[in-house]
Amino acid sequence: MMRKDKEDELDDFGRFSEPALLILVSLAGEPRHGYSMTEDIETIAGVRLGPGTLYGALARLEARGLIEPLKSEDRRNPYRLTALGERALRARLDSMMAVARAGQRRLASA
Amino acid sequence: MNWLLRLYPAPWRARYGEEFAAVLARQRASPGMVLDVLAGAIDARLHPQIQESDSKQMKGEDTMTLEMFARCAAGGPKLSPSERRIAYWLSIWSALFIAILYLVLTKIYREAPAVQAVFWTSVLFPNFIYQQMVYLKKRLWLTQVFVLAAGLSAMYLFMLAVMLIAKAL
Image (tube, each protein chain N blue to C red):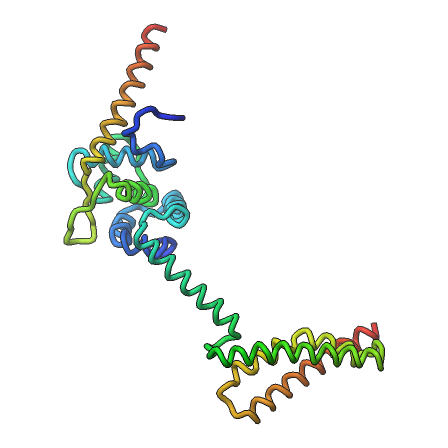
């Protein structure tokens, strides 16, 4: 399915598209490390990401500059959203909200 | 469960290994989790995201592969250009020699097992001489001749035995 938003950076994430979106949402509040993201995502979306999925998505997000690691003294490396990541998240959420509104309108008129 | 980490490529482990292990340590082990990590490791190998390290790794592999090919092509240990030239020519001339010998023997003795054994020995003959020369290059010439003669004799006798058995069948 083609998306029209050119700013949507998550298009080519394949099966990691949804986990990547959840990670971006999780990091929108504050910087978090891997395990903290897993816990947070489970709370907000009811989905528990496995370590393989989590780091598959994290590596893609970092490679595209949507998130960046922060310095850490222990081995749990926290990440935060970059400006590009914030724009990508906004674009994706706007797109999802547009779809949700259209769906709700149609359901209401059915 | 840290052994699962070894399934990931080295550049990936260098970048994410520690934090991944920290996450792994706090997860409850389950078949689903193991499958998830396996799928992640396959993905990391098929779609590497760590470009710089990955390219370094590729260069390293390429260098190793090229080195391996170079060694195989040269017959094993490193040879000087002159030693390589000698080894090539020795292989070529020995192949021609054994081919002529086979033709002459066939003309005289037809398809006798001893002649057939020469043919089958000749298949490995040039390579055998080449390898011997390469691996024995630092030995005394007498040692080289002895090992070469013994090796070729053993090979010929083996082929002769095979030909005799084949004829008896």
